[in-house]
Length: 173
Image 1 (cartoon, rainbow, N blue to C red):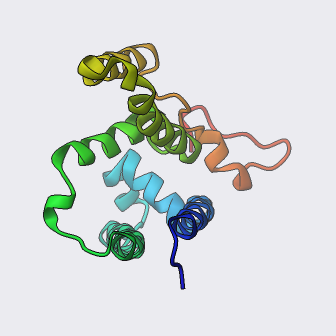
Image 2 (cartoon, rainbow, N blue to C red):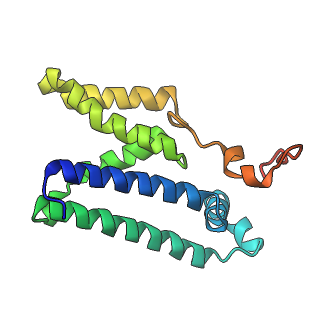
């Protein structure tokens, strides 16, 4: 039983490591490849025989399972939870972390999450202008790196399929 804030910290670190390992494993599996195809061109994936409705359902279920696990740990650590605990700005910050890090990139999302969490704390010195400075920095990041800080490497996704001496066609697959 976890009873201290340090214990919850280590439990959340464990869940993050488990989530990253699970996401990386899923990414290189048949399901991950199907999700990638659906994201890139749903009609082409359907034409190639991918059951898009089923794989979208898998994505929904996977997200719901992870959200419920982390939400349960969060609820226990906070001792009470209410809809008011989560504001619109928190949802936007999560979306910013994903976009800033790079869509489809696991390390990018981690970097984006750290930046979105740490930057506002570093800007506490300019308390009254903290959100303004944070917003300007986010816009500068988006302009300088529109693909994200760590963009997805499409060739890395399909590394298992392209052995030595084999390359992907010019169009990707």
